[in-house]
Image (cartoon, rainbow, N blue to C red; front, side, top):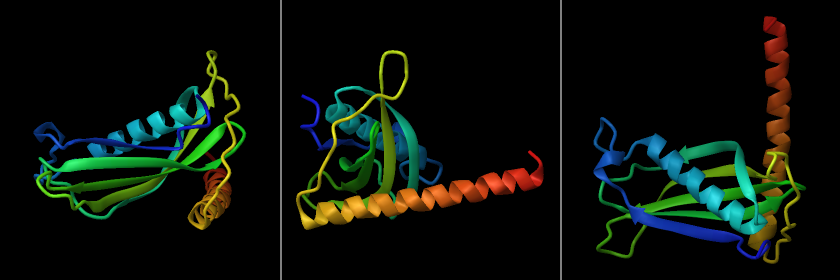
Length: 162
């Protein structure tokens, strides 16, 4: 049911096919996992098919070793009319022990769409805890910063005559 599933965690083992030339998990593989978890969380919240509108602020904190147990956690931190802002954390560690370390963090914005691909309303999320209120306020501040960056990029492109 829409509006019920605010967060989820995907768990799996990092495979040799995920390795980069340095012997660690490729950043592109991590970004794919983030997108999958964001989609699953947003679809669960909205009850609709969702598309990625933005992925940003990605921080690769530490590398992931092949064979690590990887946990990609996504949670709704803000909802607009048709969009959902999600915080994503990637944790990884040796599957033989319970300790997991933060490897990556980012914000993803997903938009729910109808059968014609047009944005469609999503259930509104309201924060309950102080942490949730902080996360929602943070999402709003980040949205305002992205708007300013977008305006600056438009001015830059216009100045270049593109």
